[in-house]
Image 1 (cartoon, rainbow, N blue to C red):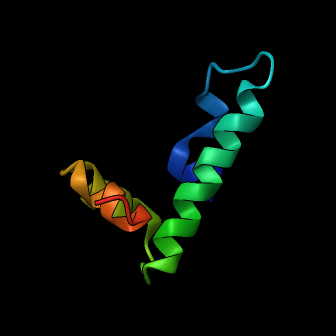
Image 2 (cartoon, rainbow, N blue to C red):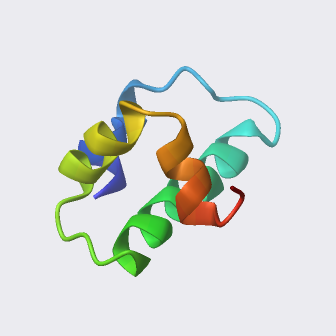
Length: 62
C-alpha cells in the first residue's frame, strides 16, 4: 500500500534516520485515514490535500 500510494521506491531519502522517519509518517497518515473510516487511501489523500485544515481536524488539532 505504501509503495503504490506514496511511491516509496521513487523516494530520494536514503541516509541517516530519514527513511525510517518517512515510513513512520506514511504509516501515521494511513492509520489516520483508516481510523476515519476511509477505504480508499488515494482518494482520502487527495481530499485532505485540498484544504490544509482537514489533516489538522483528523489529528484533533483545531
